[in-house]
Length: 235
Image (cartoon, rainbow, N blue to C red; front, side, top):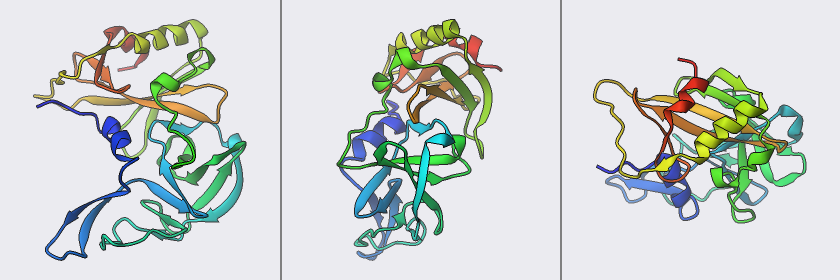
């Protein structure tokens, strides 16, 4: 069966739907799969799946708090979201503006790398955190985390300019293979998060997986990375 990246599907679905509903026997009661959103001051903000706050210095003033978490509480598919609603953040979670970026907001999240989850104003700005959007020449730090645990654990960082260029070249030269199937007969793939820092407030974050033989990732379609990237990833 052809594998489709969940990351890729997120960006296909987000512009079209706020929620996907699996109806039960009652027409008004549904099991709702919420998109990661926050509504504030009449604007719907969607989570940036491939970006994180680069540094807390970019946090500006507190502008409010989450008033209601809809996930696990709302089962009516006709529910109209309101200001202060959030898909997954608890009531009382602080909401912050980001310096120089009125289209972005940040919410405290202890499970997120650097402590905040970032959201962009849907409909007022394009999604601009794909790998093709990275200003490669400005990347001055790369961090590598082992993920799929309660919180991501940093296992390496790359500061040397030559090594940064080498690492980015490996990413750029990955080979698209939408038919690739990882070898998970005996064990699941190991998941890593790579974070590319520039001088921007949002750093770029992508997932790399290793099935024991191949490194692969999802810049859009599934792409195979040179095993040379393994020299940057501690085992």
